[in-house]
Amino acid sequence: CTGFCKSMEQKKITYCLVNNLGGITTMLQNVIRYGGKESMAQEAVLLNIKENKAAAITGDFCEGLHTTTFNFSNKENWYHVFKKLADIAGASPGLLVTNDVYDMLMLTYYNIPKRVVQMVHDGYNVQLAVLYNDVVDAFICHSYFFYETMCQLFPARRNDIYFLPYGVPVSGYKRQPAKNDMPLKLFFLGRHDKQKGIFNLLEIENHLSKSGVPADWLILGRGPETAALKKQWEGKNNVAFNTPSTNDDVLKAISQRDVLVFPTTFEGFPVALAEAMSVGCVPVASNLPGGLREVVKDGDNGFLCDADNVVAFAEKIKWLHHNRQQLENMSSNAASLIAGKYNVLHQSPKYQQLFASLALAKGTPRHHSVKRKLGSRLDQPWLPAAVTKVLRGK
Image (cartoon, rainbow, N blue to C red; front, side, top):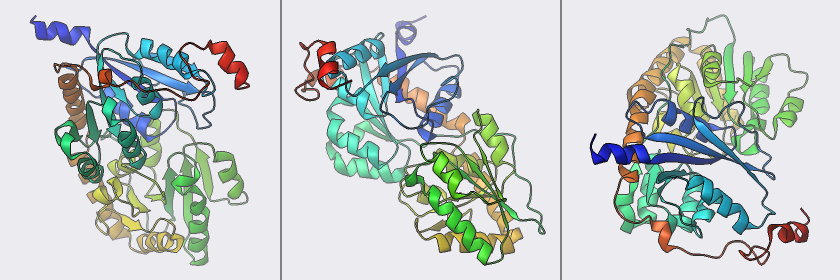
């Protein structure tokens, strides 16, 4: 084996992510699971933050993957917290895949023997890049909209910015044509929080009901607003709630539906959208810049509506109800697009190839030249962790 092989063996790809159930988690799982036999060694660090109220990942992050769970509170002394995180994330050389503010903050003070790639999913990640681009060696954007945004923000770093759509499994699950005499099977898939537009779903249902359009609803997922969402739908007998435990269970469930109703108000490139379209479900989704506009071709494989226009959502669903052949044509177009451009078997190996090239690149990681103060006056490298906890009332 050459020196190249030995360097591949010594280095690792380390994924650092907040322990949240959601699209980013699923996307990274797919990058790992379907990366191919030539992938470098992989590991993950899950950040369990005491103050985080979002729904956590159920079960293993990725079966068979070495995963470290790192528990901490925002009230702790940041120097002590991030030193521990640096020791875990930097235990081996290679590449750190960063997704959130915590590991980026760590890199502004502590050096690890890894180059750093930031996954730019949405506007939040663009904001992080503005604040912490000096610790990042390369940026990967799933959406061409965010790729162009990053190039405009950082023209001197265009060579460090990559446009690389992710993939979803193109499974054996395929929806069957909707029977003309049956209600359409509608569903929502995603995290249950207000930004996803979940409280607009019942309003859409009410408009359908007033128009005499029957619908069978399935609301998948969970989150901080699950209890409130269920309470909102109390008394409705045409809705069911479910939280599939695996991605395969998700695909199986949605393959038995017809239309994804996705009135989200904040999005980058939603995994739920790609998964739904992969099995032939037709999206009626918010008209937002990024992945939604790039994947949903209005009138061809789905419909786009203004995010808060519940009447428009209801009218598009009503049209699909009355035009079943066009629904099937759009279903076929949706599945074909995902199979052709967003197939996980094609896209995930591209991620692993890029990761390997970045990990093996020569030169010092950019974050080694950065040294910034962490936190507030109660965050000091010389201050005992116990003192900070007491003063912050932890």
